Image (cartoon, rainbow, N blue to C red; front, side, top):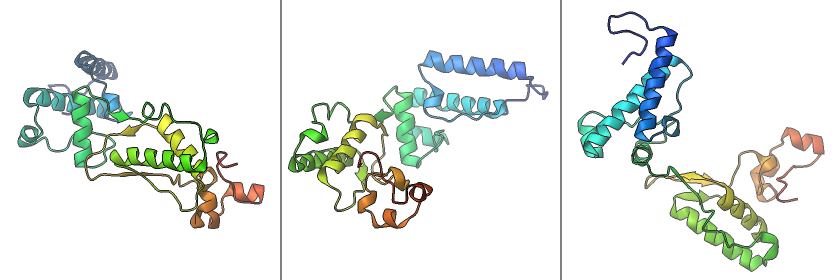
Length: 217
């Protein structure tokens, strides 16, 4: 599957490579699939075409047998997902993609009627926050929340996540952690995080104090 060689052994011109890429992309369009949704295609044309050809091979095989077990019996064991997570998640993403199913999910509709944080009491904020964390956990998304974060601040963060963030479907046994941004000046939990308060960032030096997310101010 070397895209840059002709059947006679010669090299394909850039014009020929582009024509092949157009033909491959047209194949995906007719199949109702977008390769960019599953594979981060390389910039280099030859590698890009090889990746597209690999995806064609997998799609054709799947539509012929429609079975992960049969695919593996054909030697197709590791789905062409780039970047990948792990074999089970990659299989799940490939199967959803090739079958035209959504690759991401969100809680936007689930929290449509949730009140804004400034309109609820601390007790209700805690109830709402727990509800959102429960819905996330059901989808294998775990929230790392520091002890002592006020209920309204926790709820405000979680409500924003539920309204704005989209997540990939994860295979059983695979978890995604959220809550710590790893960038302390934008983290809503910094005031209550020992590590976050100990670390010094350039923004801290400029303001002469630990900088935190605007959501807290």
